[in-house]
Length: 183
Image 1 (cartoon, rainbow, N blue to C red):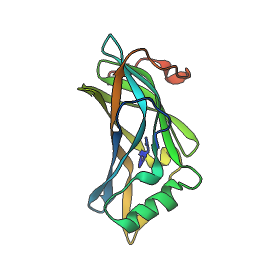
Image 2 (cartoon, helix red, strand yellow):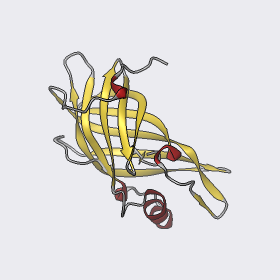
Image 3 (cartoon, one colour):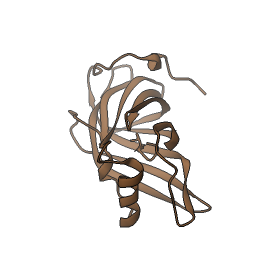
Image 4 (tube, helix red, strand yellow):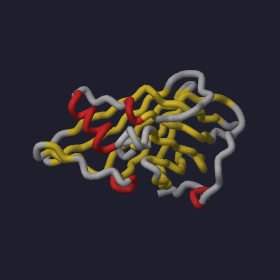
């Protein structure tokens, strides 16, 4: 999500999973004219499989959008109620479609909108750290603004997801099923 996973996205609540420990997700949001904040959730669910060829796979990696906190109660309330609209859209869910050599492609669904995201990953012990950029507008999240300060559209998402060795979970094939770009 953007804020997701936000997120925002990612944005981005993770739903059902078979992982051995809780994950974490951070939404790094820049403010205009100046400043920034980090939205954090430790309510990540899902599974990432570490495959024998050092690639990864995962489906139904999600986060409950209502669990993000920023350290300021009023901002949390606005983020959840006004921008994420968690009453109507409670979670963000991602499925990794392709991953190799530290790059991944995934389908990310936030607010009933699904987009292909691309990012990087690294395996760190029994966890996988995923990092990507996304735009709030891609998921129909309205421009965030309060008392003359607005959130930038672009959001950096960093997720730490527990991993297990094994076979990839089945994920629906889509146009994103092409190998990640090397840009």
